[in-house]
Length: 180
Image 1 (spheres, rainbow, N blue to C red):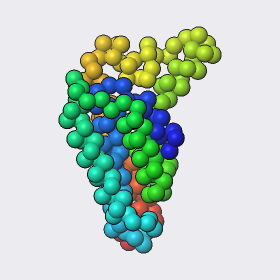
Image 2 (cartoon, helix red, strand yellow):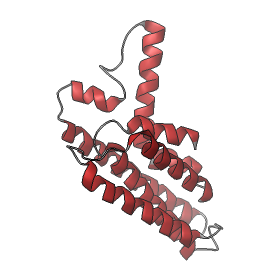
Image 3 (tube, rainbow, N blue to C red):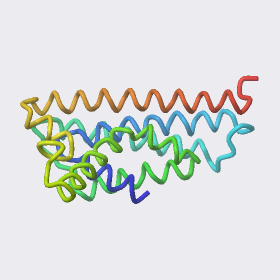
Image 4 (cartoon, rainbow, N blue to C red):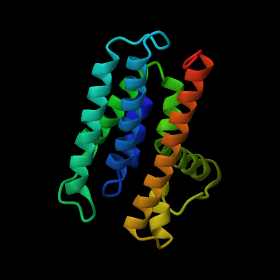
């Protein structure tokens, strides 16, 4: 939970980047929890339908927030919102027993955090920078990419990682004897 919380906070640097990426994660947990509800003999979760509704509500909240946070933002999330979204994603991973899958579903957050770690290690250890600026979304801005381009491309990466995560979840479902 702590790692996810801080990873989402690191990602919150451009208008809509963290909320849009978290939206994908909440949609994934909606699917996962609903799937567990429909297959109680395979996944033994407590109140999976409630988890699906909660995840859907969080996805809806992120979507509504994006209306006002799209560039140029009129409302900012700040640390309080980013930390809350990360904490909720981490908590959903725990209650759905998908902690390892969270690294794929939130792969964009992992990439952002890894870029900061690489930058710190390289600068402190060797006096050199790996990126022009970290987290990596600022690196691409300094390369001349417009903010909107960075955000949308990172959303695409996040969406692809969520699709891979849902595919892995489905593969696990089949391996556990689902649909059989």
